[in-house]
Image (cartoon, rainbow, N blue to C red; front, side, top):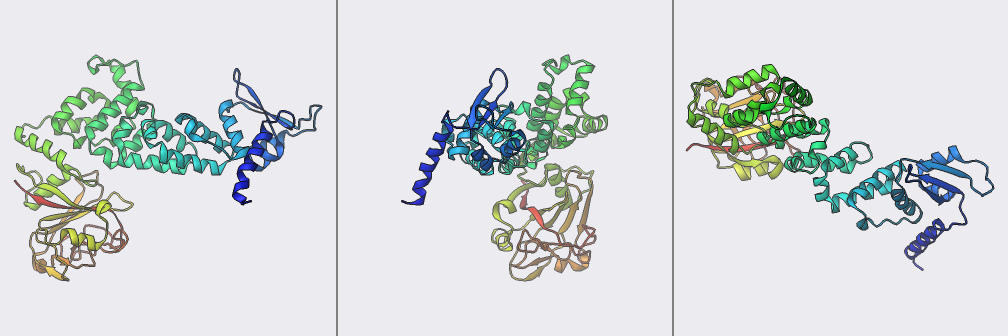
Length: 472
């Protein structure tokens, strides 16, 4: 007989032993009043299958009593119905998950970890991810709290991290969003994909804060000073991570201003000054801001960055008004198209007026460059007097930047075209390397006036985007 055919027979025999009410040497009391249930078991099997039960048994085994029982142990924190499932798995290696409620599978997972059943832990996580993904998205908080409550649930932790990064809107709309922890909420709103719709982030964070304090009035116009203080204290750790400057003036006035008292004073005053007290700003300029804020398809920069870069292209001062900023059309994204030089040249060769935006790995730095002429693959230097490179030390602080234009004596070497490299602004910003451009660097300030990095060390690219700019 094939060995594999013997296993089901062995499994069935062990299950019959479990159900035998005559021969056993352990009784296990599971649950707490009024749900206590007594199970009969066998020391040799439990010792072999569960490290957790082995430790308990070693501390509870005593001389066999008149009933032939070696030990009686209590597990008050385990539900009887869940323990029965796990006990049958310990004996027979059988577990049919399809007939169990989704929430029960989570309970089985938690208790399987308690009993040290590693193979079952791995199986349950895989089953949930492959078969219950939609349910987990709707019940994100339960999955998040479970997975990060124990280091054994690494697969579920990865699922949560990926969802927070790629599908934040589904978490905001999950049925248990308002019960997520503050730590989870902060992690969620920090992700760049969440910040693409800042007004949605603000509204959900606000709703989360209100739901933590059900005694608050439904209308902020009816809030007392104490009500605002209550909400402020609840959200004080979250508010610093909301990118209010991604909002339009209309969104700020209608959605944020009524709750201005919960925003820290210094930030509040700056927001009010920038969004409201702008007497020189014409209505059509506000409209342009609204349009541009919705049209920048980027994981790295915001529309404020594009407005500043637009001024650099036209050689305007920071305080100068720009009635018609450039449109930034995404033509390449590393995480979508790849980080190979060949892919860069496949997409960008013969494309002019391009902006390269680079997010440096393991830092908050943004680097970039503007090339007004076409890219090629012919190992040539190209001449332009209008190219420039730039950096932002912190992507969230648009005022902390370095702008470096090509020197007039080196305009013939402004950019370099080579099939083995990504975008190259000669000496100033070079993307190179087969592994996320891992040999990229900023050599110095020979061709361009100023160094945009303090170091010439190699760096890797976490993300990069190439935009082609146009004007109506």
